[in-house]
Image (cartoon, rainbow, N blue to C red; front, side):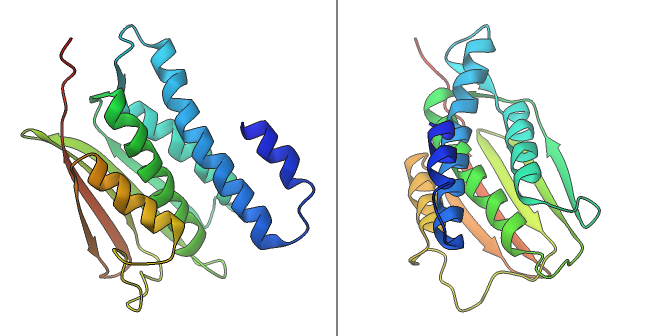
Length: 185
């Protein structure tokens, strides 16, 4: 699917449409990476989600950051196994949050850092994507927007019975908490 989108994008002449194709390609890649991890796993129901986040985030970093001296990517990821039914929507959430941070937080060659954290706490899993960039626009209601990426984040967070918090002090911090689902079968 990614290859087909790449081929089609070669025929697109305007920048906005080209970026739309590339974002779709990255969404498809995030789902494919989950299946790739499953096939490599000894348990076809769960994957090491910390390692998945690391791989996906590095792929996105390489796709969106043209000068690695300007933007740092720091990760604090606990090796937690996540059920496939949670992994797919959560992978798409990560794709959107990290993509948004890398594309929008550091305009005009601004320096900064994107931090990605993932850990378990009690019966919940906590995902945080934090940047020290220009901050999230106060004019945007992230729960009610026309942005496809933000709509996806909200819908998929609901799908995994999660809660999402946004802080906009000295950058942007998205924190998503969701219950750890254990596969029974």
